Amino acid sequence: MDTAGIRETFESSEDFTVGIEEEFGILDPQTRSLTQRFEELRDSAEAQDEVLSESIAGELISSEIEIRSGRGSTLADALAHQREVRGRLFRRAAEHELLLSATGTHPWSPWQEQQIIDTEHYHRVEDGLKYVAWRNNTFSLHVHVGVRDADRAVAVCDRLRVVLPELLALSANSPFLDGRDSGLHSVRSQIFTKSFPRCGIPEAYGSFAAYKEYVDFLVRTNSIVEATQLWWSVRPHHSFGTVEVRICDAQSTAEESSALAALITACVAQAALDYDEGVLPEPPPGRLIEENFWRAIRHGLDGKMIDIERGEEYAAAAIGDRLLAWTAPARAALGGIEPVLPGENGSQRQRRALEGGASMEDVFAAEVAATQRSYAGEGVRT
Image (cartoon, rainbow, N blue to C red; front, side, top):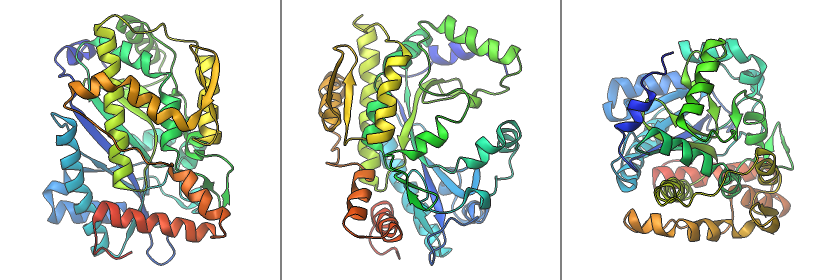
């Protein structure tokens, strides 16, 4: 793995381009359990739908499929392409008598039954991680935002460390695992970010030189052979010249996913603008951010978070308003981005239904039905 060209990639990057990646579970329509049909959908798209074929990817297991918007010159461009390929994917799945889900975990399908897809990359992941990879049957939302200049990109990553738990609390959508209520709002984060190496919230690097020194160390000591083995929840993407935010659970509806993508784009842009104006705060210690990370995993929007600068608690329900206030200048500069954040996250909605007497199976069925309606439009069989 050659790190020599990373700086040049960011020097030629364009500010605030956007790319969106969404992961979906592939379900048997009768049982709504995960089913190993990724290769079937991929091959079908390759044979019949060039646009879709260029936008889908495998993601570790054969019961999962990812949709990628590609590089949009603006958020609106990325969202428009993502809407089109979502619709194509959901129609293709319906033709194959399959359903797709978009919660952070599947509530009951055993990880022991899932198969690793047959690619060199994922065989390397499996060989390197074993149980950690096998156990990771999770689904998430990733957003790439172009940031020009390597030092600026690293500074943006450093700034977003504090924001990551807040974005996780907003997106928490995985209360169930192994056939039971986990008691967490994002059990996906617990089994992925707390298990994978080089994952979760990274340390602050301070400069691109320090970041490159770290990556070179990992390469030199045979810890990694490719940049994708840096699974941090925010990272400079070496090939795209983007800051990639990877903290969020998959979202049950397209409206929720698009709103989060818009907010993340605004957060990256605001951090970059703050860097340009010389007003970035000093990065706090990771041990303080970890307190909020745990609170987001455990309580989502139902609990309290810590204002680290003030050393005071505040209601997690205020996160959306706080982030909208901070990003107001960037949202205006980007053409008036106004994400409509939902009043509750997916975990709150699912747990409310469970406490109201619905079974876990019924709760998940309702989420799958909402996913079908939202991402595919009316008329798709649920």
